[in-house]
Length: 236
Image 1 (tube, rainbow, N blue to C red):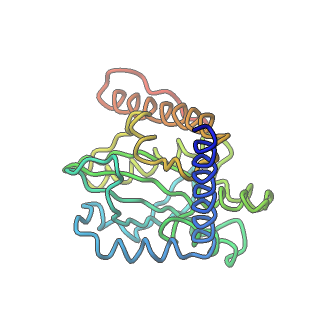
Image 2 (cartoon, one colour):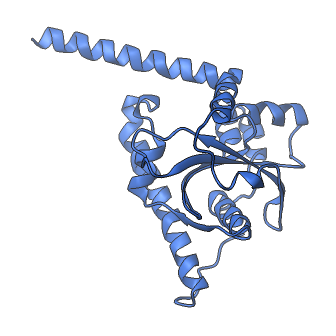
């Protein structure tokens, strides 16, 4: 029995490794982006914020940005009542060469994103549940440290500031925004098969802390708008 159990564990680890390498090849070849774009076209439940696709957003902190919106399939743990999608944000004037910038945006989920924000809709309420500087992460994975550093939009609290600016932009078009609770974020956004087994627990714990902070930040901002508390300053 122990021998069989060891064989099964080894087989499972092999399948996980194959899946992870297949995923990385799909990401860096642009095949993932192409497949997701095709899937978005045939998505039966298009998101209501789709009209902001291609709009420009000017931010004092982040510069001039373009926003793209794509519908996507419901995650395995997602609600059947909600519509799911992803917002891709990219710079109009990137700090790196245009060809490099085009390529690393191509490695995002839909091929447009420097920074990506996953969300779901219920009526006019937009709930964010994941945010990531995808271009920078994919550059760092290849060991391109200097280029990855140049892909930071701001040096401090980048994801917080992106969420705040995008939330303001969306709310200006008649929607209400919030960030999901940390446990919900992890269940919707994380595929355990893509995490290295030895780093899985540490990675999940880091994500819970990150999304717990973002959830609290947007709740404080909402309370401040309603006049309940003073907003906490965002570092620039």
